Length: 428
Ligand SMILES: *Cc1c(COP(=O)(O)O)cnc(C)c1O
Image (cartoon, rainbow, N blue to C red):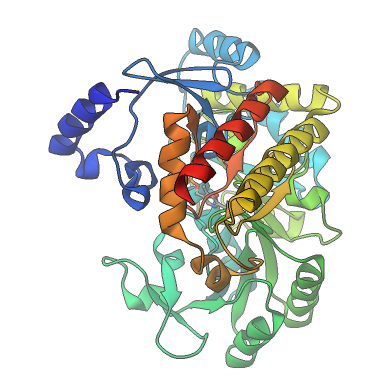
């Protein structure tokens, strides 16, 4: 396999774009090597600028639930494009998509559309703070909620308490209101409540996908709900990744816990830039222009993006066994990986939620960020490179989730398992 065109494209990009990429996860930094530049997508496949074809288990980091160039979504977008790209005035498709989502989720009476997951979470948190009149927020180590200032925190020196900025450029004054707890560890959450009576919201990925795939325990979610109720704190599920991925109703289809607010992104835009945040009426009524909490966006609810999201969601709702089909493929894939690893004496942990799958090169079960960090990233890097050479495109980090799309066939999964057997043997 040659990737000389990608290498040349990367050289050029680096001279005008920091790191040659518009989002750091694309840079292949944690696996070595250089990024593959994409020429086009075809269903389950990516085709790079050297003409190599890969089965794509990234799917734009989640959004493309039907794979690349799905005809239904493509036609919806092209039709919308001929009517105008943006108006900055309301369109009926926004109401249509909002109605569909409000009907689907018990937690959502009203929803507002924005242009990214980052924006959705940032706005949801402002609303939670405005609604409760409190400043502190609580998040979990290893959960990602976009790159807004108050969420770029890491554990400070000492015990779990207030976060410190995880990036230069974020003033400590902005993160001092962000408390940090351990995922799946209710005692660490109780400690935060003991330290602060001013917690506006707990935000979490109910199925974490940004430290590898690490689902929250049902009991943990229930205890969070109870703590929130006891303390007048809002519970926000960040379903930007898990929404319409883990099940039709995301994580909410798999738990009895009902959050106060939900954020979406990725799948909800069908491949176009869309985010959304929604919740109960009494909370959403506080949002501008009905209420005092300000939030706005020139391209929010963009008609082309809304039509892509609508076409995608309608197709999701039409296809009866979509998620069971996804799950069967995902389970088959990771079981194949697990066996291949075992045959070669490699420790591997695997998990699946609907169309999301994860695998850690790790001796032990992964329940939180500390566990995840004990994974063998060198072996992952070798596996990643080996699989790429075999024509299988995985996220270029141990700490990401893999995605099945509807265009994937059983044969592709079987071929991928065969490739994994070969690669594991080479790297053991
Ligand atoms: C991707 C992601 C975000 C950020 O969304 P962007 O569209 O990249 O801004 C936020 N939360 C979660 C859980 C995500 O997976």
